[in-house]
Image 1 (cartoon, rainbow, N blue to C red):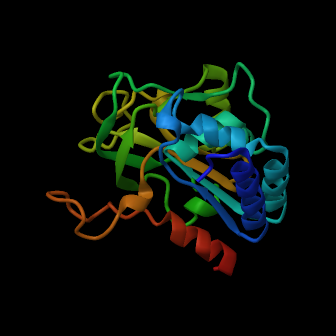
Image 2 (cartoon, one colour):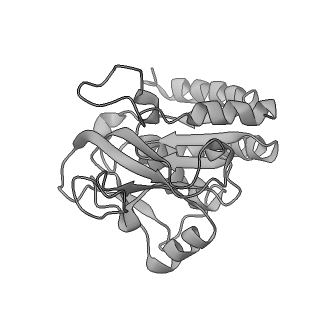
Length: 234
């Protein structure tokens, strides 16, 4: 509970300690302050840019650690500059962002995404073209990026996943398959060195037989297994 200023400072100290001792730093989805304004990713990004937290995050990356952001966590990585630049505080007017869904309200559904690169420990167990069926649940998941930077992301192999039509398995801008209208159908991106991954889909919401009337094939997206194998040297 962070009701008082001293609670905030105590949280920062605890967070610093945890980051200094971890191999993987993961930011999940979730609400803060009523999710206003601009979603909780904005609040999370402010925490990441705290001088002491930022120092520990850069130390984590320097020692080969990994960072993951899902949904609001993805928003935080983009708004802080960790994605796509791999470094905090590099956000400019030309930087990508995550904006309100095209339908201007929350979406909660299953989508199909396609692997676009394997240039990351997070993606090392996949093949380009692999399909996954993922749960999404967000109000501000539209990835917005200018054309020049989008071309750079594709050229660098930084586009991790794209939304596809599950019938023809082709990248699509059409709703509901692209649930938020993301430019270039981008669902997730990585940093240039592959240590940081951000995505809108809730990979962590998979459990066998959890979903009704949806076959289990393609539901599991073992990002976490890939990360563990990376640290084991497998």
